[in-house]
Length: 230
Length: 230
Image (cartoon, rainbow over all chains, first blue to last red; front, side, top):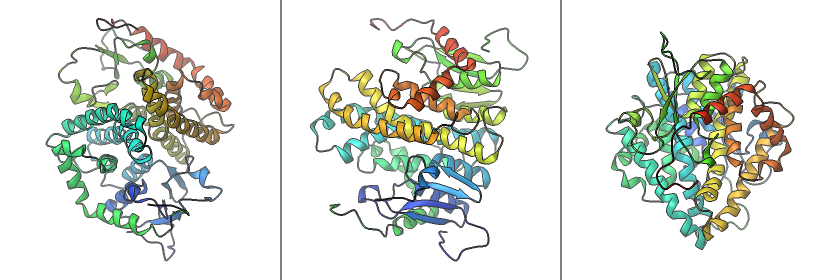
């Protein structure tokens, strides 16, 4: 439930997002993780749109030390890192962590796993494909990188098995994992694991995901930098 | 306070570790993060030593889906992912998260940042240096990878500024960040940020870090695989 106005009596939780990104990043920018969680939780929230290029406000680095999105605020609390924001939302509002303590910790383990044990290997591959595809060295570098991604995808698929979600109920772990795996959309690697294909489809069929995706895409009202050829 | 015996009435929290790793990984294997936290908290703990090579027990994958260390247990709870284990320990025992709610969330944000915004770029570089140093493509791939690591190190150094620790008091965020940056020990990159050099030295001067390091090193009682030339 994205809502930019009118200004409410209590400030809404607010997430930052960019006004423009290239096609290859649309639907992948990390504010989508936070939007998805808030849509699942039925929260009203605000969006602070930042220029993707040029100067950002002087205090933004203080809120987001890596000068990226998302930053997040909820009343007096300021957070950065989508993983921490997912954890915060799931601990504050019921619905995105299992009630059982052991299962809730399993969800937190998988939340970290998406960022620490899966994403780094995907990032490495995507950097080659998006920014160095024209270079001969990238073709050679790609081969061992693909092997590692395959290994990690198999680990996740094996751990998921026939389960619907990583920790019993749909949780922030699934939001983190599915949005991480989505970075491979330009490759055929996820398709090699039919269990993961079904898992991602289940997740993306959720109305809250679709609302979050639509909201991110609708907020790209800015223009590319001069000379950009998409 | 590593303690393998006698068997106590209550089972001790237990972390898994390898019986042998190559020199380049000694002091870096991720059980050191968990050991360091438990040493800071003054907890007695057990260590379950796993063979680094050959077959691991059939149920280990169920506890650690990526077949790595550490896995962790505390009574009925089983956890994997060092970041989740650090979070668990810091939330269960006082000492490694600030008491103030805002500062505690800042620590959680930096805990995620170590894994999600810093480590992936370091991992990429280290993979080149450790496993592909003999390949011509790796020399070319290294250049843009170094540039990204430099950028991330500057972000962390700028955010830390003159502060002693990332979130006020020494916290799990510092354990995660310092052990992440330590992966650059074979490079001169951290040395380019004097603030980070001092930060890492402050952290590593803590007696709990030294105990954790000594304990990890002492547990490498196994042998390399046949034919290994260190």
